[in-house]
Every structure is written in C-alpha cells, then in structure tokens.
Length: 566
Image (tube, rainbow, N blue to C red; front, top):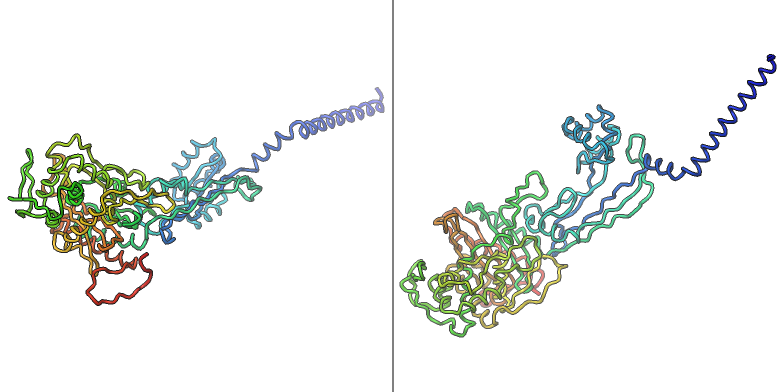
C-alpha cells in the first residue's frame, strides 16, 4: 500500500472512531436527558438539597392575670452527618473540644450512626457556642434552631406547671396534662447544602410550622408566691420533712395557689430529684385527723337527731370501743356539739359517729368529695381512701369520726371546706381557665353549712385555732394533729400538723388548707404549727384581692384601695 493510500485509510479510520464516539456520547446524552432525567434530578437533589424540620413554638402557660409561668425561647442545637464528620478526624476533635465532649466517646457515637444523615451532637447550646462551632468549618456539621422551655416562677410554681423534656414534650403537671393543647406542629423546609454538607440557603417551605396554643391557669402568681414563701419558711423553721398549702376561691373552686415543699428548680434539669417533684397536695393522701370532725357533726345535724346545743358526755376523757381506747387531752365533761369542735374532742366525735347509722356518716363524706379525685385534671391526682360503709366495724366507725381510717389529699380537704363556705354547695375544682367545669353540687343542707361555719368560728375565737386569727376578719377553721403511720403501726413521735379554714366568715371568699409533715420543732400540734401559716397566707391573699374586712370595731371607716370584691 502506498503512503498516500495509507494516509487516507488512517484518516477515514480516525473519522469513523470520532463519529462512533460522538454517536455514543449523543446516545448517552439522549438516554440521560430523556430516560434517566428524573433519576438524576433526584440524585442531585439528594446530594445538594435536604428537607429539614422547622421547630414549632410551644404555647405559653399564663396565670389568671396573664403573667407568664412557662415560655419557650429559640435556642441553637448542634448536629452532624456522622460519615462526613468522621472523615475529618482533626475537625471532629476540634468540634468535641468546643462542645465540651469527650472525643473518643463522640467518635464511637458517630461510628455507630455512620449510616445516618443526622445526629445531634449537643442540644440547646448558647449562641456563642454555636458560632464557635460553625467557625470551625467542620464537614457535615450544622446548627438547627429549637425551642427550650423556661419557667419564670422557678420552684415557686413548679409542682403545678410541671416540666417538658429536651424535645419540648410535657412530662409532668399541666405541661403533661395539656401537652396536646400546648404543643405546636413542626413544619418542614428544603435547604441547599454546601460541599461540606451544611445548609446554606432555604429553597422551599414545604409545610409551615403551627404554634401551640397559650393556656391560662386559675393560679394568681402573687398569691402563689405568698403561699410558697410562707410554707417554705414554716417547713424550714419547724425542721419538717415536707409541706403543702392550697388556696381555693370558695365560690368557684378555682385554685389560686398550690404550694409544695420540698420543691425543685424546673430550669435546672441537672439538679432534678424525683422525690422533690411529687405534688404532695394532689398525689399523696393522708389521714386528716381532727379536720374531719366538722363533717362528722354535719352528718349528726343533718340526721335531725342532734342540734348544735345537743350535749355529749365525754367523761372521763376516754372511751372504750372494742380493743381501742379513744382519749382526749383532758376530761371535758358534758359538752355540746359546738364545744366538741372548739376543744377538738376525740371522745365526743367518736360518740357522735357511733350514734349515727354508718351509711349516713359515709354519705356525707362521699358528698363532700372524699374517696374520689376532685376532677382538677392534674395527672396522677389521687382519689384518696373511703371504704364502703358496709365493711366498717364499730371501731372503724368510731375512728372515722375523728379522722383516722380514711385518706384525703390537701386539695380534697380544701374543697370539702369550700362546701361549708359556699352554703353547702360543693364547687368543681379548676386549675385551667379553658377547662369546662360542671356546676356545683349540693353536698350539705344550707342550714347545716351555716351552723358548721358558726361552730368553726368558735374554734378560732376561743378554741384550738386561736393562732389562725386574721386581724380585721372573722375566720372559721379547724386544727388537726395526726400521728403518722410507720412499718409497725402508728408512730409515737411523728405527726402531721394541719389547719383548714375560710375567711371572711360572714361571706367566705377564700379557703386555705395547710399541712406540715413531721415538724421537729418545739410543737407538733396543728394549732401551733399549721394555724400561723394559714393566718399569714390568708391575710396576704385577702389583702391582694382587696376583700373588705368584716370584723372591724364599730365606726371604723374602710377605704377602697383598688379592686373591690366582685
């Protein structure tokens, strides 16, 4: 073959190769553009676009006057794509150091999640920490905005408001009970990622976040602070194990304050102690002791067999019932029903209880709400204990008359006294203003409620409750001193001190119940330990609500200082 012919052949071969290659490329281009376009678009987006969650704002919890008790504030959280960050050992170490994490532990966590695209490194960091992490330029590391719950009232309202977890989901208290109401619905958006896997720009809002709804409690933050302050001071002064205080609106049953000791700071998750998070006012039933006696006498007055002036012989200061001997502090002799309350005679109360049909006594206890939850809606609220009257033995009926053998919560006790305050109508208990409340129910005859209120005034005026007096106001209430139960039965030197009362007694506006558990000071009697706490809480609450006095000397002029009593 001549040189010219060879040149022409090679030229044609080269053209053929180029043509074939061009054809292959064109065919491939057509295939990619037409047949595999959707697949390639998806793959490209997967590498450069990401759908991320947009956190939703949780609704606020407010007191009755609109003061915040729980709010959510946006905070940054640091996350990473495990495989991307593991690919740069030095960057991973720098990130761990900046976040205060152990690098070896972080490496193990990331390695265990290598196949995932998202893993939180540290949640709820400060803005300054988030900026330092981003400045490191670590591959696959980004910042996500979340919300953290803050509680302005701190430990003061912790047992009512409750807490959320790190995901802003309710765990206790109102936060748990109304989680569905408060919790928002997260949104979603698509973002562009840079070569290091970090979101750099928003592309599309796929679904807008829906914020949660605000919730108004019946609490008055001012009265809550007052009750908490006085309760805490008393528990500390008496070296007591615990305490609880409840303030109810006697007319509506709304809880204006509910304080518990010991408490905890809901803003400091690291220091949470489960034992301190129990709401003892609603979840821990106790034997009520002598605070039950007004309801024993209510059954007696309702029966028609007794009047306030009916005489009970308590001599010689003790009463034998089966294997039990009921004792009084001294021999009160022959006393009327009012004096049974004023002197808190166990013998008198037991004698009255035994003189009544068991079913009648049980019926009064049942109608004032003992043995069932108050309907507050608080998670974990206890029902207490009230056994069926058919199972009572004589000794049980006697001890029930003065408050042993049944168990109630401080909230149940406060509500029962509210029935006395409200002319015999048992109000529904409310913690949340948005909650629907049933109408009040008749628990006691109107006449009986007025007679009891008059007798309870005598307890404060000249009986065991003198230290519950509030200057300028008529106060009605009852003391209680209860022996605690241990592994072997009732303990000889461990008590609970109680006082429950109402004011102004002429037209009660508030009911306050105070319980001090295991006081270790100079006294353990309800009239000495709990009554003064009641007096300070009641005096302050009446002043805050501008409730007019009803026991001023004749001719005294009272000036209106603010809101008048509705």
